[in-house]
Figure 1: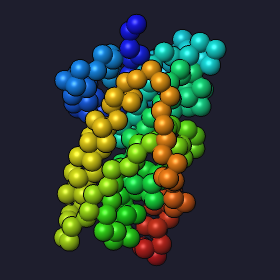
Figure 2 (figure 1 turned 120 degrees about the vertical axis):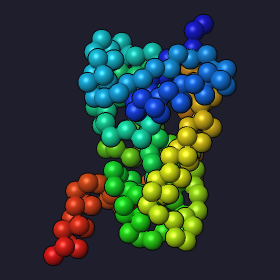
Figure 3 (figure 1 turned 90 degrees about the vertical axis):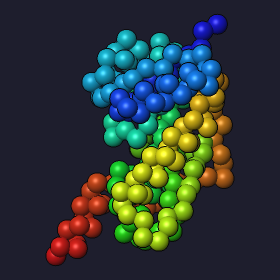
Length: 190
């Protein structure tokens, strides 16, 4: 039996790194790159809930919102690697965390659902923010943590089996959307 394919919704460099390292781990899945909403549309064009796509979609630090009809057209749960801990759901998580002067940050792997950053959480990778850490350094550590989380989950993501969310992990209620961030910026400049 052939292993289910994995489609990586991410940038080209991340897709190449993840694909190369998953092959080095001996995972039998075909891993391919989905670069944009248009590429996602092409991938799911022939599939629907009655005839699902036979693989797993994994979004890695992607801003593309996957439509519900595509989420319904998958035989395996889609996963998102979110570049923030569960306390910071949304696109502008890092900016809010910096504003809050938190002493730790992290990344979250979760089952993809709508609304975004709300699905059952599979795992979280955290790291400390050291005194004087710049925004650039924090972004670097966030990328490193994301790759570490992804590689740790690869055997589960490669399996043709349901995933096991961690019931002890839950999303925070903080709104870290683009609109919320723009409202904060407008308030600061007023």
